[in-house]
View 1: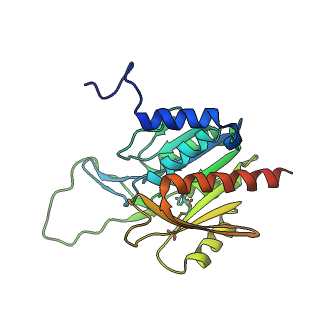
View 2: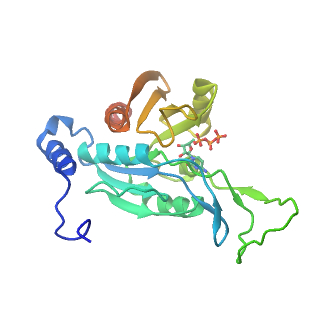
Length: 245
Ligand code: CTP
């Protein structure tokens, strides 16, 4: 098709990003580190043609994967279905459901130095998936939902846990809810993210977050997800190194 495949030259932007990453060693704050990032939504099947999901575009997670790779890390991106290609140099593991994402994370997370949970994982899935398309009827329909596994919190059950970074997608009481998740999921850092407002968060090209740690609070004002991801990676690398000292 001329758009993809062997021999296809990278876009100019990708070439510049790759060159900048490799020439500017001062920015290689994650050199030699293994980083796993979850991104995008998960989709939970109802029947062969329908599913439950959310508005996550994956842009923040993909920008983080690019920024971590540019900072010298070996990056594994575990992604739900999104309309983007993985950044060059990043290992992509494509999944659909929360259960598949959990299994993909568990398969290699213990070899990672840093885990960043950026995916908008569905909290519930239909209790049973119908094997045939559900037919329309005039009756009110109820779908029984059952909780999915919390992928980020499940890291606490592992014998060796990587440095863990979570996101908190909130529409109100952002800092309080985010701090609650930092404690409950025993993260090292949490990115408090105001979703549900025009111009930032889900689907948008821009975002603003408050980075919260156990004795840390940094406001990252509204900017492109690309720039924000670089700032986040720099804070993550600094905090990771301090914890290791
Ligand atoms: N997360 C996860 N597995 C889940 C649900 C969430 O790994 N089943 C992770 C997300 O990737 C994120 C963090 O947990 O890093 C918080 O996700 P969020 O959706 O903000 O919060 P929930 O824990 O789902 O709680 P609530 O929906 O009640 O706000």
